[in-house]
Image (cartoon, one colour):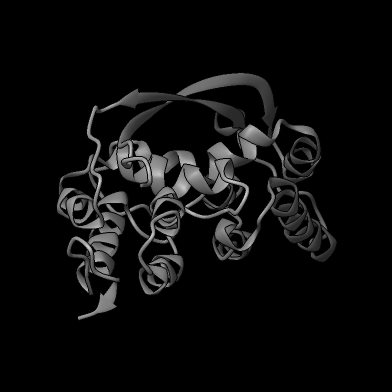
Length: 224
């Protein structure tokens, strides 16, 4: 029998690096050398920040290009980068650099930000908390999904892709370790792109995927 699913919660602690950029060339140069955790933070860290409105851009590089450099064209290009399409942070780093270098080649001058609008590179330290919730059956996990904190959603569905060798979410990893056949549910979870949604929207998508399948004890997963 497989181990129960250990539900965890998490929080991100932001840490300054001392690295900063005031113009687009400096941004490119810093991105080439900063710790991979900075790239991760500036794409994903905003999801766990309290928000009272819909973010204009999903990643910090696009937001700064628009608001700091007044580079709408570059901001649009950076906003289209989906980190889920890259299995390694280094691949994502290269994509960022390519987009920025393309814009530098197009422009006759290097875009600058005002002194009070520099880009500050930040890293995140993830703090993991145990909730003591241990569902043993897929049906029990399904019942918990709508009640999960956004921290749990982030940890199990987003951060897991960085932690697991298969680059899958924790729900899929656990389901694949069960005796019953849950591949259709795993496939449905794999089709969810977590990047262009809030964590509450992502939780609803995961919940809908689970509810599409019958997950009774002793049964194989099947589409309802």
